[in-house]
Image 1 (tube, rainbow, N blue to C red):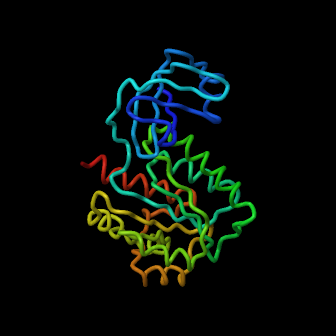
Image 2: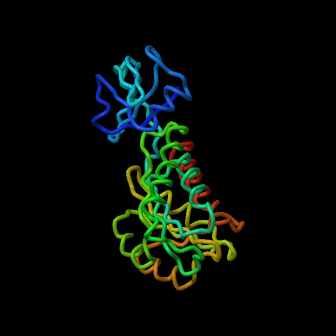
Image 3: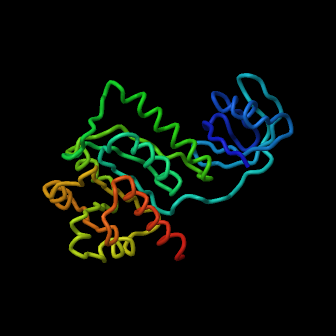
Length: 250
């Protein structure tokens, strides 16, 4: 069933209303009308089966049939700190990372990042990435839209890391040396409700100096298997491992 995210003031346990671009999708693309049902989710994670009563060019509104108690979120909150990659790879990372359960995305400028974050275009860029996250969250039956945060410098990222319970850095040199246990051991020590910050370098990876700086503030360097992954693949690997550990093995 089609799902739509709305603001808190647009959904309670009795009524709903939808405005903006989703109105066109509901009425023109899905061709829904009075009596049709859809699912709405507000910012607090309230999920409700709703029935349309009225439609117009500007709004769709109706009543709540039933509040749902489904749970589709990872039991831990994973923020993907992604070294700025080339091209549209960040869009792919946000889309697929949302499908796999990421809580937030935090781009940052690494030493080997070829792409630079243009502050003048940041608002438009974040709006585009936010739309991608919203659509992916609706498609994958998420209860929350992941946040896409403004890009930080590497030094700012190091300072920001103090707010997380578990800190992991993907380091391909660990894979080359045959390290296999750090990720497993770290996940085994992680509890439901913990916040995880995973740092992934851009094309070319992180420098040894960057990894050393991260280790000084509590990051655990981990290999993501014996193969060297592309930057746009690493986050997917990690989120899949987290899902397997916390959802499939329980």
